[in-house]
Length: 102
Image (cartoon, rainbow, N blue to C red; front, side, top):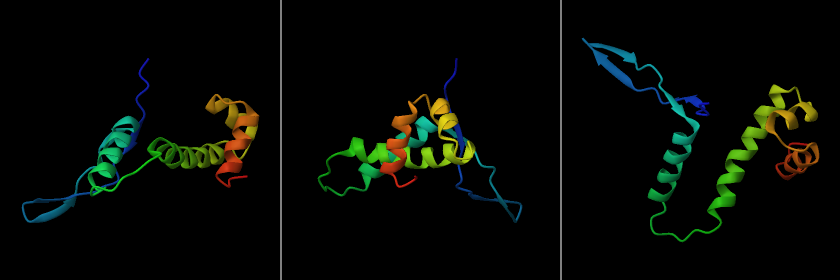
């Protein structure tokens, strides 16, 4: 079973063809590749600064928007959202409160 999640690359580059400017077709990128690219970009731009708790930072950056989208998808039905995510409903409520989504 392939678990790659594909997301569209929203960066649209202009391509010139015979004097005409066209937008390049968006390409799809796996969620894994998007996270890898974002992390590499993050570390590249640190400019020697010390950082800690990167794991928690990344989880909160990913978890909050994921929960928002899932809640919209389930029309804010916490039971359905918990089932979809594979979480206990109490755990979902705790996470929703943490991110101010409840």
